[in-house]
Image 1 (cartoon, helix red, strand yellow):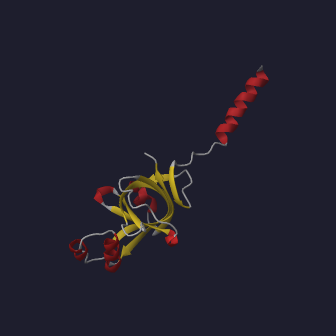
Image 2: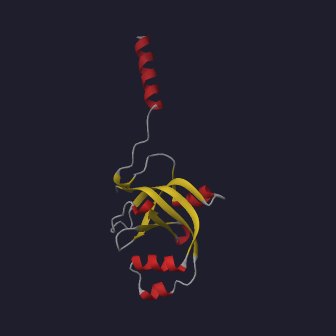
Image 3: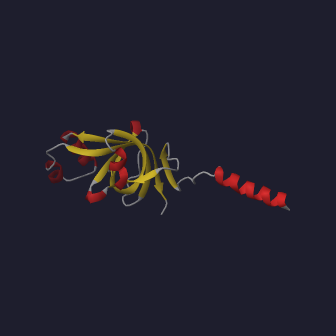
Length: 155
């Protein structure tokens, strides 16, 4: 009886020791996202620290998707700001109807200054009005994310 109990206990410990995080449930794009070490958009700045660029996995809510072909999206950040997300080598595109959905992204966050020309281009692709585009007159210092994989989480 002791051997059976010992074997069961050892079996449970082995199962827990080799257990893996469950993969994310949802629709996958690009390389997908392996589970583990995911932070929220509110934690990106702290994780970047003094670095200009860092590999990370982030979860957040989609605010806008490129209306032209899904070639970029923005995620909600603290203080009513957004983080621009593009996709590695334009290797995949996002559905254009996912605003408000939660996603997990895997790639590189980078501190960057985006030029006025690029900001206007992105605004045009997002179908902003001519009035809104004309208001873009200065470059923007921001955190930009290049995703190699995305999962749109199931509700």
